[in-house]
Image (cartoon, rainbow, N blue to C red; front, side, top):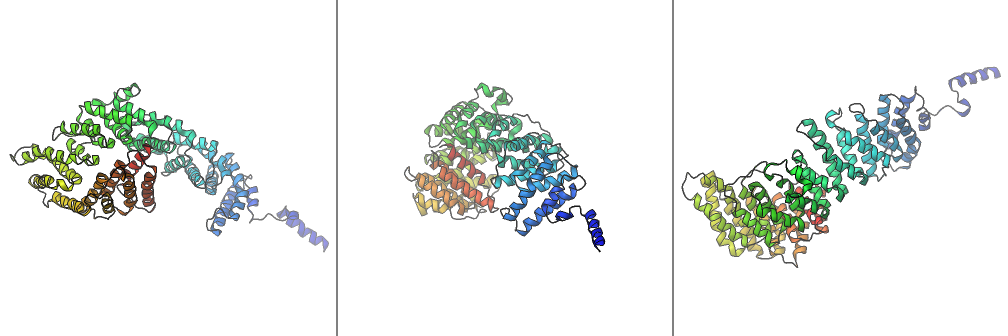
Length: 578
């Protein structure tokens, strides 16, 4: 009997060598970790460990802070990371291993994530790069510290990754997210250097450099706000082939603020040797618009002086029109207003903007007259429109009539926004003349300008000269498809700025900022933020934060508004002045 029992024991011992200490527990992650070093069992071990993690997360409803999850990570994170970082195993198993590692969101897996980036070969391990980048984003959200080795590895891939050559569409988006999530200060110089890489007109170059690498680099510099990167950013503005980046670069320069002033002023003046080579590639000083937007948005003293000096001598119609259009950003300022009026008066009616700007030069300039918030401009607009009204009433076959119609309509619209109760009578002939011109030359019926005039008059009747009353009207939701309803809100925003005093300006700007969330109409919102911008010439961080929070809250709720970009720019301008 004893011999039989011994035989049975020996038979089991052959099947289970660890009998004396107990058979391996197939339900223990330690068992499968021990098999990672066995080439024959590695693939199954990787798969099983991944299942352990998935099952555990399911049991705790995805709570990564649960003690059960942490205990499992203590067992599997480092061994799995060590295996991947050691470049052991076939490609298929390594892909599966990295996929699991990327889902752990554990700092101990950093060597593996770095290895995925270091081993990048276009078209071979794009999936691993995507997963590793996604993991970095998740780790930063958990405030996991990204070590320098991993920082260097992810930036290295970012600097050479080409979406046009990738077989995985989403990989570059995850890399973009990882770069902006980590936003290491150590990357500032390297990101600035990437902006110096030339681009061409091919689709691949546009995708790889403009839409991915350089756009991401610019956005990164916006997060870092390093003054040393300003020259590289201004260089982008002056590079013709990088026009798609200008709006983002402008926003970043505003975020950097005062340190960008000297470079922008120098570039705008056209005499700084640092930019001479770049500017020589633009015919007829056509680089001016590329710089003017950023320079005037910054609105600081050195830039203001340079912009007005250029405006006073500019002979290129397009350059002059755009600089004049932006001159209100220096208000309240008598020199800026005078330069603006001179630019408008010296531009021939019907003159057309060149290049991408297009449109009627005078009409473009006149549209910004509102933002000087100066009642004297109403009489000036009425006087300016008189020759056009006379022309339209004259010979029927004069081709100048249609050429001057856009400026006339803008003169009427702007006068309505700026007029006070005392100026109603003087503006009415301009309004009726504009409606008559629209009917005679374009066949438009309905007296649209008169409807706007009546709506604006109603707002004046309600509030008289009470800025707080006008601010409250701004918050009344309007029907966007009805121009007269929109005009009432726009008029109210304009009058809030107009009737505010130095003592009430800040309070009224704060009031407008808080009321914006109640007003969904983009035109009304933009009129309000322009008023805020005017009321706070020295900047205001708190109001800027209110604007940003309104935008961010709406975007989080899935609501996009056409005014968001303008609101963000004003928020950045308010900070740049501090």
